[in-house]
Image (cartoon, rainbow, N blue to C red):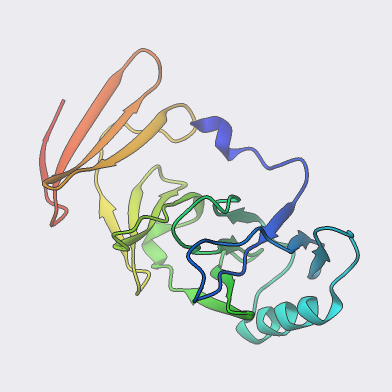
Length: 203
């Protein structure tokens, strides 16, 4: 929904830390906080700074060339999921990064963003057991892309008449097809794609 484009009032994000030998994601003991020139990490129970973990995070950000301030952060802030992809972070230059922590180790990847995509305005992270995609991205040109796992390839799904600023959007997957639904309350559209991302039909 277009309401998801709004920034959260408090830029505080649970920093999950899945452990390989445990069957579920433990409740996060730390949280990330965005500052103008760095990220801070706070202990969830005491609200006190976790300086060693913050230093580890910021060294990785500096090494990969993240430009502050951060523009956007996308991810699922719940532990009720099969695994954790972490957060997709857009820096001030438009670069995209994937930040996560697992087995007490912080990981940061620069996500290659093809020039023709332009600016990413929204990412829906999908932590699905099939592990085919990180989720989907919407660009400022109202184009929709699947983000493939594990190579972060942006796969375009062409739709006519979609406007991310005024329309709600839904991406469905079944064993045979991908279906894109979008509407503005007056006009409803749907497009069906094959599993090879070829457009089949639309209504």
